[in-house]
Image (cartoon, rainbow, N blue to C red; front, side, top):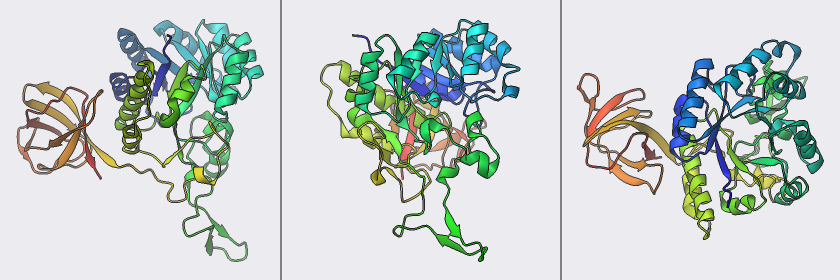
Length: 401
């Protein structure tokens, strides 16, 4: 049986290492230009080449984003960049714009994955892209399970990809002008400031400075604030539509998010292919431990309604704080890169690429560089501890909030 691809986000090289370690088959990432996540960190040319070589050494794939909605001045440097991506062996590029699609085909033999930004919501448009030479079509998020099945039946030879987890844009397939209008930053060229998450109120024109809250009840102030997509409870139904790749959103999220979400969807996939799939509530508990705005099933079963909107906050929440990453192990000696404040005696959990979390009490810490004692470790500290607890490089430590 051909297994579905698990595709994870990588906003930088560290995130790339983590999603591969925690079970991704492929990663999508952006260079310094032409992608829709300008603020994700991204990869310069040499970093891109290193990323491709690293992925291929593991038998995994790299897809590079060229998915802006291009203007004339975006195109001048594109042909040489496309040639470079082909030279270093990128497995495919993600494209939304027909002009960019044509430039990629003219200047290279790169495989092209058509972005969700292209709003493919029917089998005829999918077939058109396939006939034009697209290798894969990333379907729009505004599709139901039944619609995806019909697309698969009508275009059986097209590779199809769908999003299964992460932030939901309030605009159709992410094509939005709010950021352009309110901040001058073009969402369709990678610079979205997410004004859909802002808190809004009304101002009457003759009473400037007097703000009236927009309320349906005491919490109703976030008028475009969708919950995040989560499909773990019915991931078997998505697999059975016949798609080829499931995709996790979140190139701007941290390494804990990328690692844990990848791990949980990998566990679910392996459970499915073992032949005895049954949804495990533990999976969703773990997903709540990562940055989220609560969860919705998106469009898969119905068009979103009031229950799919977050009325409580536009901020992210989580049940745990990511405390640190293990970067070196030598017997009992473990070296940990600290990301959130931690003290000796704190009850933590060790997160590994496979298996359930293991409880761990933080012992005394010393500074790894000068061996001085540390009472409270803060972000960017690198600490050394002595423990018999099982830890390996790229394991993570977390603390319940």
